[in-house]
Image (spheres, one colour):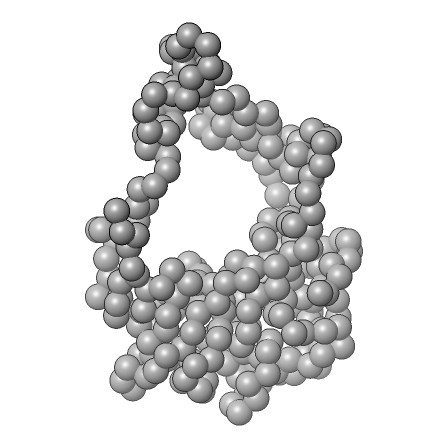
Length: 260
């Protein structure tokens, strides 16, 4: 396991973050249980490393990023530029990474899907060339390149089990993102450690009055007497959150839904 050092972020590769405390522009709470927390900076991550095409870099160090559950690696390129990228399992400090060079399939290298062999485990994909939504960027998640669909598309199996078409000219990174070890450290019995993370205390619905929560009220200890819902009576467990209107013709095979 790679140790994540508590280095501060590189100033030129990070931006200051302003917290809202869960309030909107009018000061009304729109997201409960948020507030406080340690000051953070947002690290600018080069996910697919396309801007560094045909360049060779060296891993300088690994960093813990409080804004994501995957560790980051600081890369120094031969051109003198620095860049943050996702840390990949198997990388070590001092290791060499290459971008856009066919035939080098080591963990941490990046290239287009058209240059990768079928069966490769990859991460940090984009849905479309013009969108910023990413696939398989969480710690421990990955997608598998199954086969070529035609000259333009490749079939990949996503972490959800869905098989989807991606343009073959999209870039991806070989390997599986490294999970941040700090995410697995138990918080212990000190409430302040949770407050440092930006969480405010939460109260169970069954401990409230009926006017405050659908689970509230009753004589003695009750379990709510209904399926788990939010304070606004919306189901919170066990239902599909992906609307069908987001169905795409690029979905090669839908993920397997849980049997009822």
